[in-house]
Length: 249
Image 1 (tube, helix red, strand yellow):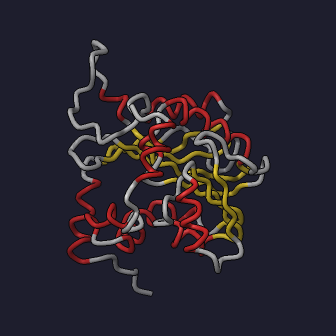
Image 2 (tube, helix red, strand yellow):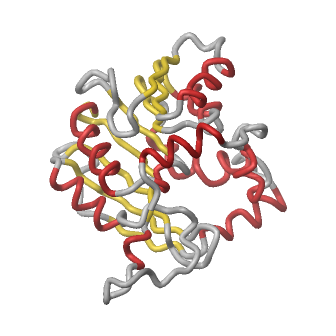
């Protein structure tokens, strides 16, 4: 059950020699992961004016997202990560940086953001953090703004008797977060959780979720579409073997 304090301690002392690219190795590299798995899921939402990335780490996804917006804010709990991104993207004048408390989008004006993105980071937070960030989305998103959040679905695997989980290796996932719970959080905050894709990650069980969030009443507001994709990790096999390929023009 990773707490905010545990996350801060862990990522402040983590060996960042590979800049986070080690988590892309199963995909054959970060280019393969971005162009083959991430971008196809969000490309209809890009480009945008104002973009926020939550928990960018050392900028593994930032390096691609930065070219998809006019203004970008990186928000991370770990000062070390923000400092690394400042060095890495020092030539990018449209990026600003915020060290936050792991819960709030500090300094971000209300009704100012077109796209909020987080990948492979919020899987490690619990319900209190997810609830806070979803509430913040209701504050900062513009009328047609959208969020794409990669988070835990581990709570869906809690045993019916309440004694533990049906999965032995929880991959340090937040144990109190699930797709259904995030859907409820959105409803409680006047948001529309209009699409969720349950995916497996490092195992055969769908312990993660990609959630798409808009404002209620926006053009994307509709009944939730829930997709189960237990073969998500199979995408890495073809990407590792063949790499990503641009569509022919």
